[in-house]
Image (cartoon, rainbow, N blue to C red; front, side, top):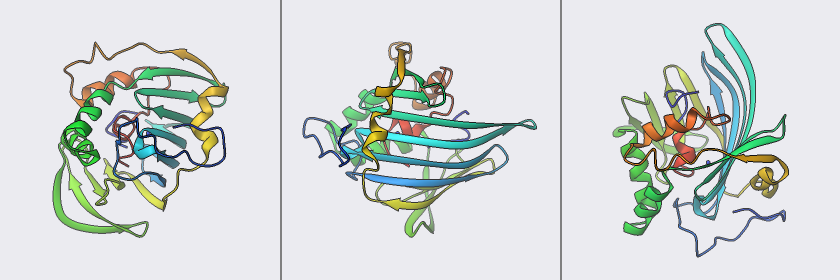
Length: 237
């Protein structure tokens, strides 16, 4: 599914969340969080959960969707794991997946070096041409400010860079619960039990592209059709 539908990405074998690694960049102002979303609309219905830990350096996303286009619908279950600059896209039914480099990772790290995790959020907002409005909402018990963009109809962001709601061409993603923990540790290791093959390294080909162009390039790869900007930029959602 193209970016017009979604923006909206440390791994321990133990059952407890890993402590933040001082050697890794802080890509998000929140150390660890899990958000569950409900999706409704003409093209996508279902749910997803996205969790990160180590300030966004490590993330997983699990989707359970029905995707419909032109009168046809298909059930879709995907599991993605993102560790630093590496994206693992796993077909859980076949237990296979691909490993691809996140072409936006270096840009994120540079933003952190210049300022901090808040600057990563600015890169994300600039990439999507977001403009802040004065409208406020409360979603899943948290306040958020509505931002508009010609690319995304609107998105409601908390003051800690969590996207709690988005509306794209009538397809709505809305947070239903937020917990400030890292989620299940095994979900950060799902790629280790799957057969993983290397995808193409698109970093050189995408040099000079903006975020949306880079995202479209990745979405052309098998297993990454539903990748979104939230995956490339850490837990912005």
